[in-house]
Image 1 (cartoon, rainbow, N blue to C red):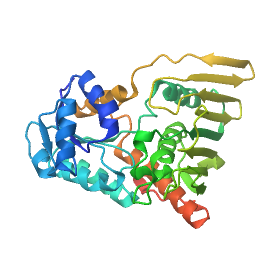
Image 2 (tube, rainbow, N blue to C red):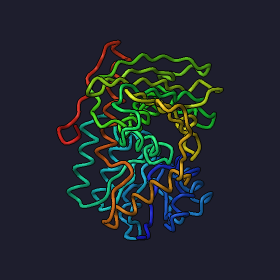
Image 3 (tube, helix red, strand yellow):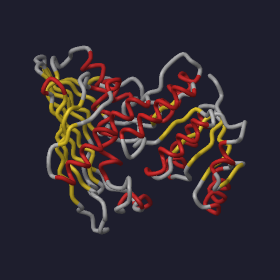
Length: 338
């Protein structure tokens, strides 16, 4: 496996709790961190044993000993920071959503292709062992022709994350944070493209959120398949779930809309209900890095490519517009992503 040396663009919670451990478990080095505040960068670097702390992107990107960049700043910064990293010749793993417009997301994809670097998205769900089990069942015809998908991804936002996600700022709110994840998971299951989204959203939390903290969507895919999602920062006592229903059976996966390798998969068809074994219980972010390493080495592909991340973003943007306008909104995809 090719050893990578990472620069972090964003002194984020997910980098601290998930990605730095995953990088090191993969045998990679984490060299330094960029933050908008120099004192934040210094304290973060000290806490995580990093050599470089800076508030200057050029200082990080000009380093020849950094070969890859992980972008996990606030959502409004992803596009500019990823583009700067690509321009510097670095491989890029970017948090979702890739950008705040679909055009910007596809510009990132195009720039990486021209630069000859790997560009991938840290959507953790499609690579999870549970999700890949569901994908395989659908692909192998276990439920016949797909008809509907239901996702329950309503959770309680941890107190430590109750900052910009709840503010009326570009990139804030539950739709770009959680519905975007749902879209990546559903898109990986269904072979047909998302076409139209209808969404209703509101603010329910006692924190007085300036952005939507709860949303429900209906997504129409090709061939008349419908998907429903319930996404929230406000629900503290419910399990997450993913259901796929078809002409010959139904799949119910419980506890699987999570960052951890947990949850169960059950199939019901004419032969009755049965639990489906999930063989892969590896850390979801180590799976992401395995695919990323394989792509860098030229022998594989990322778990979620830039084009796939842009497609998930397109669904989330349509949901955001639908919630704001109170009308259905078409999902606009480039021909290469359709």
